[in-house]
Image (cartoon, rainbow, N blue to C red; front, side):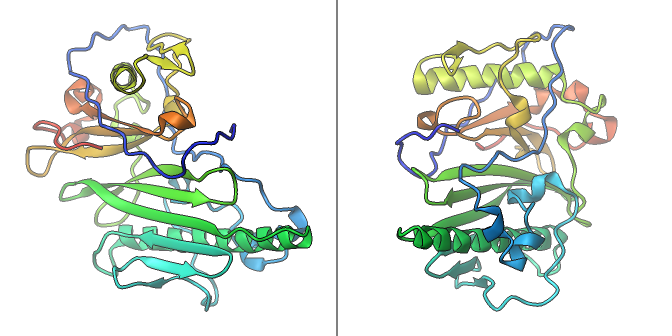
Length: 315
């Protein structure tokens, strides 16, 4: 990604809703949403330095939210005396001269499978970044420079719940010594009883993101872009909603479930774009809301029953 001298930190975007009366052409290109994470906006440590800490070797592929894996990473074979501990607010926290780390997990029972997953994921994420931060500090000092402390802040919160399915959104702010920090987003949809993750595609009859969702997201993005920057463009190119030239990059978006005005139902979906995905760093991130009426007919029968009412709240 191109470094830009913009303020650090996360911008909170307004939600956008697009109505259900969207005309869908049969020839629209189906676009898949994946849960792949963005490349981190940082310089990786030298290979020889990275190999110096065994913890880094064990968690070398760890990324925020685990890229949609259905099981958390294994717990360390031996407890790490330098691991984060819960602070007064219940968040995991750690700080030394190379990194400050915190992970806010929603409160709940210790044996809750979803919260257990998120805690384990946060600890694995921390293990990698602690090793990388120490390596970075050593490299800077060996080159006659001054170590720059890293900062990682994770926060997860529920977006919607029913009796058997829950949805959460997480943000991870990272500063790793570059020109500015970056905020990354991930979502987590799972069965409440077992913690088994559910992909949004598996809720749809076709097993893939439907044209209705594609066009709905596209129109919602246009609306928010016009409000924020006065132009329905992505990097100065007009937004294209249909056909092979579609440029809304749904493969880089994260999708969560939205609450409903009706009890024990979902009202639609929330769609999240990080900075750089569909605009410059200066534009910040985008969060969109899609009512279930747009894609209701695309849902598998067992999931249709879980949506109803009107979409409530903002992403």
